[in-house]
Length: 137
Image (cartoon, rainbow, N blue to C red; front, side):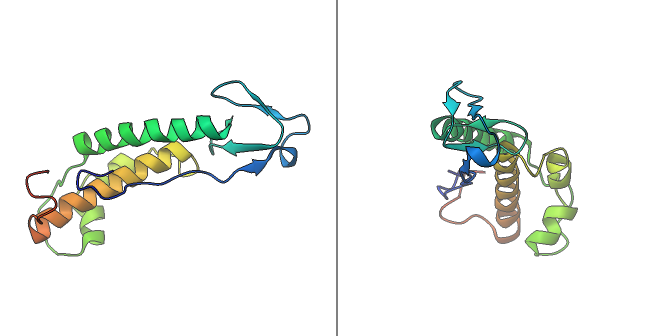
């Protein structure tokens, strides 16, 4: 959840039949269970059972929200009211996402948290506080 109560990022990679990737199955990176039916690939080299990938994503959501709140900033005056142009030209958005691996599930969670937080800051700066977010930034 974002500070405004808006459902934030929802990422769960689709399960992949293990036999399409590994002849003898694969071990879950989280719990070590040997998977022979379905596995969840994290995009950066590890495979997980459903419980472990959901737990890993839930943990990342919390970390990503905290990271975004602590690090996202408007860095220049806002010369226009276009969120997209301001996001890229007047904030530290590009700096924060440049090292993220777009294929990695956890990095996608961080990307979404950063984008959501930057957009919240810009919306507040451009349009003023709304009833939902007044006093929360």
